[in-house]
Amino acid sequence: MIPNPTPPPTPSEAAALIKARARELGFAACGVARAEGPLDPEFARYESALARGLHGPLAYLAENVEIRRRVDTADILEGARSIVVVAARYDRADDDDDPPLARAIARYARGHDYHVFLRKKIRKLAAFVRTLGPDVHARPMSDTAPVLERAWAARAGVGFVGKNGMVITPGQGSWSLLAEVVTTLDVAPDAPIEERCGRCTLCLDACPTSAFVAPFVLDAGACLSGATIALRGPIPVRLRASAAEHLFGCDVCQEVCPHNARSRAEAPLASRHRPHERWATLTLVDLASIGLPDGPSFEELARGTPLHRAGPEGLARNACLALSRERDAASAAVLQRVCREHPSDVVRDAAAWALARRSE
Ligand code: B12
Image (tube, rainbow, N blue to C red):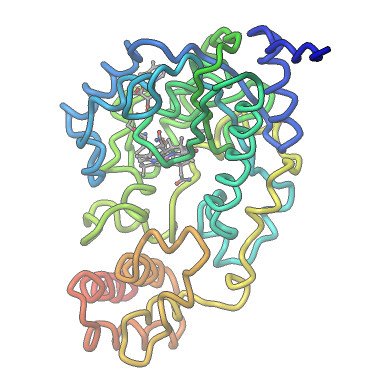
C-alpha cells in the first residue's frame, strides 16, 4: 500500500504555520497580503512622489518604476499569489548607554550589517514556505528588490503607515525592518489596520529639517537620513547644522512617536543592532581623517557595518560636519588638515564649513 501523502495545508492553515515559523525565527510581526494584481493606489502615491521630485538624491527610485507596481510578474515572481511580510524589531532597552559615537548613528545601523542576518532569516522563512506544497515557489526579499515594502506591509496588516511614513505595528511601534516572502502558495490574507495617528503631529513638528511636505509625505532630499546616507556630494548648507548632529541616518521622527514610547523592551533580534565594538574606540577625528594620506582605511573602519553605505567621502564629510560641534584642539587640527590636504572637494568644503561655524 502506498501511504497517502499529507495533503497540502489550506490557505488558513498555511497562514498559521508560516506565522508560527516567523515567530520562531524572531520576527515580531507577520502578515499576509494577496500578491495578485497591481499595488494601486499605493503605486499612484509613489509615482506622484517621483513626479514632485521627492526622491531627492535617490535617483534609483525613478528607475524601473513599473516593476514596483506588482510582484506577480517575471520581475519578482511569476504567478505569485501571496506576499508574506515580516517586521524585525530592533529596539533595545539600553540604547541610551551606547558609546557617544554610536549614539550619533541611527539605531538600526549601530551594529553589524543587519542585511546579512536578516537575509538569512528571510531565506529560512522562504525555505519553509516551499515545504508547504508541491511546486511552491517562494522568493525572499529584504531591501533586495524594487518592491514597495511599506505599502505591502500595510496591506498585509503588519502595521499602518504613520504620518512619519513609518510602518507602525500597534503595541510594538516602528523600530522595525521589513522583509518579505513572495510566493505562489495561496495563503489566507490579513486585513489592513486602520491608521492610528489621529491628530498627533509630533513627528512632523520635530523633524529637524522640516522634511515632511505633508503628513505621510517625506521629501527625501531634505531628510537627514537621505543626506547623511544616500547623498553623494556636498550636503546642502541649509541642512548642515542639523546634519552635524547625525553622523549616519536620523531617528528623530521615530523618537517622538507615542507609539514607540511603549516599546522600550529588548526585541528578539535586537542584539544584532547592539553597537559594533569599533564604535567604542573610534572617534569623530578618526572618521574625519579618512582619505588623508596617513588616515585610517575606510574599508577596515566601516567593513561589516551599515556605515559602509555612505562611502569614504560621505563618512568623512559627515564626521567633519559633526566636528563643528566640538571645541577641542585635536578636532580643530584635523579640520585644518582636511582643508589643506584632503583630495575631495566635498570633504574639504565640509571641514571649512565646520571651522567657520566653530569660530562663530
Ligand atoms: C528610499 C528609502 C529611503 C529614503 C527615502 C524614504 C522615503 N520616505 O521615501 C531615505 C534614505 C530618506 C530613507 C530613510 C529612512 N528609512 Co528607508 N527606505 C527606502 C526604501 C529603499 C525605498 C522607499 C521608497 O520607495 N520610498 C518612496 C516613497 C514614496 O515610498 P514609501 O516610503 O515606501 O511610501 C509608500 C507607502 O508609505 C504608501 N502608503 C501606504 N499607506 C499610505 C497612506 C497614506 C496616507 C500615504 C500618503 C501613503 C501611504 O505610499 C508610499 C508609496 O507607495 C525602503 C525599502 C523598500 N524597498 O521599500 C526603505 C525603508 C522604507 N526604510 C526604512 C528605514 C528603517 C528608514 C529610516 C528609519 C532609517 C534611518 N533611521 O535613518 C529612515 C526613515 C525616514 C522616514 N521617515 O521615512 C525601512 C522602514 C521600516 C518601517 N518600519 O517602516 C524600509 C522599509 C527598509 C526595510 N527593509 O526595512 N529611506
